[in-house]
Amino acid sequence: MTTIFICGDPKDTGFTLLLKNCLSKTYRITYVTNTSVSQWGKGYELLALEIIGAEAIETESPVFLLKKSCVPDFDFPVNGTVIAFSENEEQIKALKNCAAHVVTCGFGKTDTFSYSSLSDDEVVVSLNREVTAFSGKKIQPLEIPLEIPQGTDIYSVIAFTALRILLDDFDSEIGELI
Image (cartoon, rainbow, N blue to C red; front, side, top):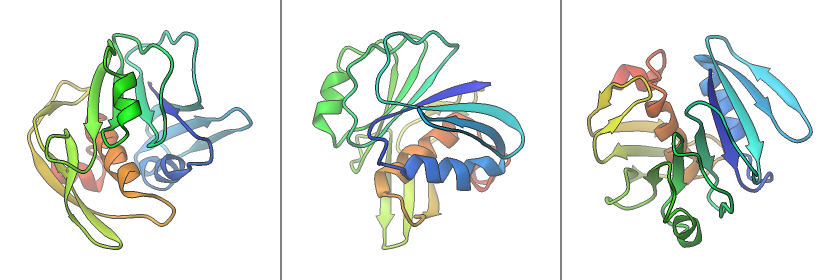
């Protein structure tokens, strides 16, 4: 099982929508907030925890999906992966001495994940440099055309795509492309 910590404003529900409507097609997701627990889908198990902060996190290879307005004020474990919004200067500054592996998502070519084309309802997400998926597979730069689901923003779609590629999501439309 992979544990995903979704950090930031609980009112920002873009990642929740993407997990429920997209990722649950190929994974069994247990989604926990401070007030509810939901399960969706079938397949390899993912535990998604919506948090604002944490005192200590001791899990095997956790993933931290930072919402666009999140400014983390806790330490990330060295064995973790942080998916961050490069356009949020305070967020990036808070990650300056981060011990975990940071994957930047944003609107520029210097980001690990960005976009090369954007319209009102579609985006072409770009992987700008080689990354290693959690499975150990090397993923080369590529572009993935995607629809922007209603209720989400461009950063959420880019960061969610980064998560799917790092998860090695091969039973999905993204997996067919890589």
